[in-house]
Length: 351
Image (cartoon, rainbow, N blue to C red; front, side, top):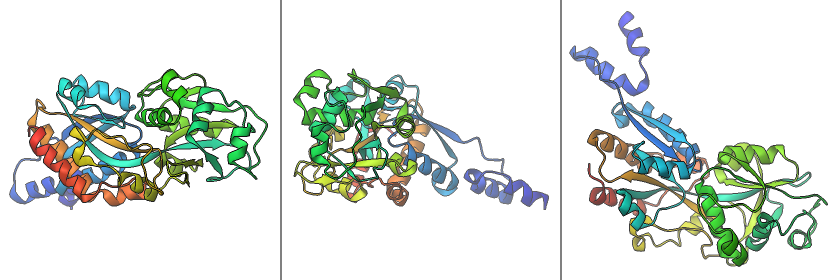
């Protein structure tokens, strides 16, 4: 009985090793390998779920433990470049030249979308319509009130208040910001020249919040606010979201289906180091602010055991964790792209 209780008290990640030791008389299993990561809040919901499931599945994990810090893509890029973590996560892909200079490899993990969210009395999810130019003018401060004619023309029958628009944006380095600003740069020449794109930009106005969680919370607490968050936070926090007009002129709801439509337009085989941005994709059903979350890893980790365990984690995620990704509103990578990623590991990451 005591022996059973001792085994039961051990975490699931080590159950296999403990049972084996009990049967063979071998020494207890060593402490788990700790794989560290930092970056994207965009990918944090699914990575959190994957981490828990992976550590519980001792057959897959081999005793590895994942420690991921959701600190924003900008900080994740800085930490992996400085060698402070085993992997970084970013929703802004790095160009091949920058990767080569830093000795990094890069591959996609999941696909999702960035969504405009509002807090307007009497307005429900999916009732507001936006175009890229209108969103740019709101975030530039050119459109200041909710009943502005430019918004009213897109939203006949919606009770728009005669109230000042409160803009909410990210205050940290963010891949969600990169994709939002990248899209607005494609839609608005003034945005492109005045603000541009990046994980951080010089916001013309608005209130800043840290992380997707912070933006979601601030929009919820602030009447007449508008912000932007990754889609998983929309569903998790029950936010009021808006439709966005795509290149084909259709107002598209954010969903796994519309993200998939945009992702299907990508030619990954022609993208060195998977450098490709999905915003403003063609296609009648494409959501226009679709985004990819990428993993950054050093091509030569000092500790090969960490490299193997890291790749074991992402092999498990891409092959076993896709139902969990889909349940959170992400688009799993197609099998052809998963194969390309695994080939990339073989040829670019020393393990």
